[in-house]
Image (cartoon, rainbow, N blue to C red; front, top):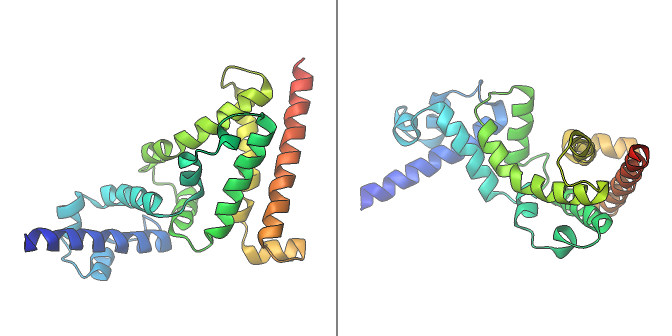
Length: 218
């Protein structure tokens, strides 16, 4: 029993060390020896517990996603009727508000998940594509339900997907632009009031765009 417990502790130390280093340097620049050194483990332990560096990287994504207060996860688990049913305009506003509040309060400039995500964007590995799709599919399903109601369509057509991309891109401003730069641009503190203002703007801007798309399709 003590050996089994020691093994579990070693595995967790390796996982936490991998989280820190992958988020700091990315997959390509992180060496297995560095992970083991930080974890205080034998250099062969990554292969023993995870099979390979690549499999450890995938497991890191799952672990960080499951243990962080990530905005995507909060939407996945949300039972908020304002998101799941009712007036589609109000549902979209609530969807945007929840995501932006979580982006802001999770301090994503420093969070492991955001750093992992941005490094994967800059230097894609192709290793976490399937895992990433599994993680975000529930959130996208909720967004697609709202968009179908707004656009008056029963299918997930290209126009719906373009609208989805536009909305997500606007919301990503809080994670892809440094907070100091946002404060310089807007000449104000990035606080709760700003986040609420931004959420309302994105909702108004997006709803107006969707309405124009519907008008042109008639």
